[in-house]
Length: 99
Image: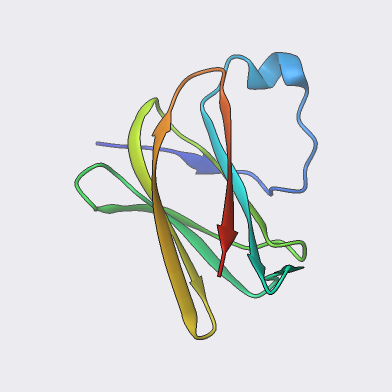
């Protein structure tokens, strides 16, 4: 079983704590502006749904996950985008989605 836990993307986290975690984070923009309405969905390496979080008012999202292969899928009004990522412990993956 795969597990992860969301934490609001706008919550500050001590860098020493981040060094011990596997974080997948990013920002969604459209026409250079943050997309504040929508969801980020985390899928495991087989494409199975794992978690979903709402985007912040600045278009941000963040997942704490185990190291490995993941897909982040953004779902917004009228748009979708997805990106395959490799999560590594201690490396905060920041992904920028341009819709």
